[in-house]
Amino acid sequence: QSLSGGHLQALRTIREVRDPAVPPYVQLALARSALLIDEGAEAQHWLQLYVSAFPDDESAWVDLARAHLLQGADGAALNALRSALRLNPSRADGLVLLGHLRMRAGQEQLALDTYLEALKLGADSVALAPLLEELIQKTGGGGSPEGSRHGLAIQALSVVGGSGGAGG
Figure 1 (tube, rainbow, N blue to C red):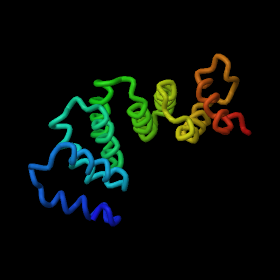
Figure 2: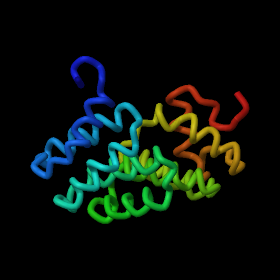
Figure 3: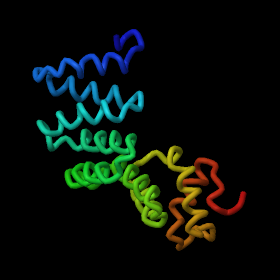
């Protein structure tokens, strides 16, 4: 079914079987397939099983956080991110998700700081540019990049063609 484009139906069919013999690598593959089609509940189901067997897999914890975010479960997403970042504090994708959580909580300055840290660690500046631009506007950081805490964000925006809050 998955090969024919029926990804969601394939995921649900396998879940209904509830076969305890589903190997962990299949659980992880099913979870990531579910994330690709924005099925947070399906992804969460398989990831919970997977991380219970492999609690040191930091990427699975980030995926679990993403699944919780898709469902609007910010507290559960934060807990999963804590597990991932405890294992590897330098995970740019984990910091990006933490920035999203902070934005949803209305913590614009913390979100900006988190996104900037993620950029330093190699996060995709093109993907973050719209968020950075919005945050620079909200936090009033459109001035000179030199010496500014928004300097890195403004530099990233200039590389990808954003205004950097300068009104361009």
